[in-house]
Image (cartoon, rainbow, N blue to C red; front, top):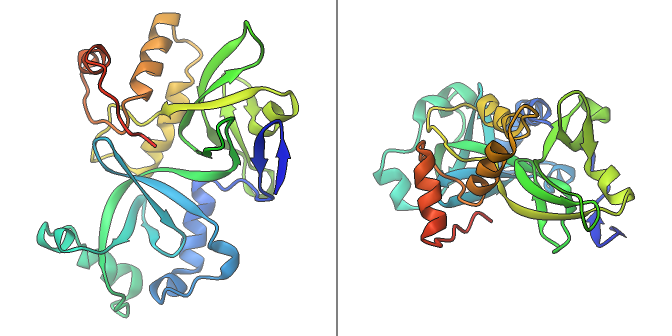
Length: 244
């Protein structure tokens, strides 16, 4: 592990959603048997369990079926609520998987990057970071992934360019996680729609007022409320969400 400007950097290439899906497809029998290769066990993703509640899973405890994310869960509540999807299990593993637990669909909410912020917190794709370039220049953007394969980078995807996390480190910027881009959600959304939320957050056409509204909503995530006033009410009532 290397330390630069207060940020820990692990020697791990950026992984986008397509690569993650391909890894799941390639190793789906290993996932079924809970015997994933050791070099893939560092991969950790985040998903939406409910309003104000993210869940986390390492490679081997989740897979993609089509454009939907499924996670192995344990607990009577998942079986009682009929969350387990036998049809997906049958199609994905040809009826040959007898792994214990329930397979449940959740909304994908980003992969863990190989960076930490100024406070030592692990940064995930979809996190909204405050970027302090200097005493007078501060921005807020959501982290995405740009590129394919070995050229992929964790970065802030802007209008016709991007700012990578590596560049931020090299320039000595202070990065602080302040929320995520996963607000005004819909349970019917698929993985690509969740990925689109990152670009939507970084919309270069936003007015200052619109951008500030997004930054406010980023604190109250995950959240399914569509009405703008509900986020303002949460702020007025000084209600805190544990989006971490």
